[in-house]
Amino acid sequence: DQLVSQIAAGEVVDRPASVVKELVENAIDAGSTSIEVRLDGGGIKRVSVADDGCGIPREELTLAVKRHATSKVRDLDELESVASLGFRGEALASIASVADLKLTSRVEGSDAFSIMDGEISPASGTHGTRIEVSDLFYKTPARRKFLKSESTELAHCLTCIERIALAYPNIAFSVIVNGKSVINLPASGTEERLSRLMPKDFRDAHRAVDASVPIGNLYGWVGLPTAARARADNQYFYINGRFVRDKVLSHAVRQAYNDVLHGQSQPSYCLFLDMDPKRVDVNVHPTKSEVRLRDSQAIHQFVFHAVEEALARTTI
Ligand code: ADP
Ligand code: MG
Image (cartoon, rainbow, N blue to C red):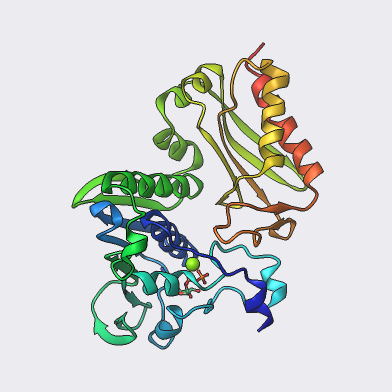
């Protein structure tokens, strides 16, 4: 149908980190306050994500793992203004087609059920959802060959989790790798989450950004030259909690750095822009890190001035 054809079909899963991304985003969309990720064998052997979110009622389990079944967008109008992270309804189906997927869920006031290979069975568990994905690409050895070593795949998974965790400080995250706890982030505010996840040089040499205009709010950190020299790859930009790569935004930040610091350093930043979802088109790329901005000139101006003002505070 029309909605389905408007949603660009695309490969969602190419490595364990993309499984992690989809499952964690689903957990966030479910309103979770605490998310636990378990990774075994670099995530190739197993990725398991457990949350305390709203759960999936028994009668919706079959649909949840079907392609283009999403509970998050009902019509084209809504597709214009998606606020949730997922909306294509293809992640679980795609994952289930290339790995073993077991989903266990319990809605408050009901019993827990599991679904695997289309079979529903009674289960036990507290409210929320646990999805276990095992043996990624075992059915497709040709694709499995493209996976890197376990340690490289693990590193991608951890980067992905940290990137998401930065934008959701109010959610507690824990990550367990081969049975050992490696990340433990309590629910907190933005400052504390940034302090826990940003490298020391950035933590020690940054200025806070906090600016508001009618089109939106911008907050986060911009690195000072010492931080930026040490590490030029700390460049994170989020719109409405979604990590994005956008030329307009990176240009605005770079221009502010050039104006204030005269090319002394590469920009390093972790910035969050919250604005009306109707002004951002996130439906341009299947992995959703590219966006199209309406009023991009006004947004450019806003970001440029906010970053410039924050950086200028240091030179006096
Ligand atoms: P999308 O996120 O694009 O809707 P997915 O394939 O990722 O599609 O998920 C399909 C559906 O399964 C979701 O729309 C949602 O209703 C349900 N779902 C998936 N994961 C969870 C979860 N952790 N908690 C509650 N519901 C979930
Ligand atoms: Mg999803």
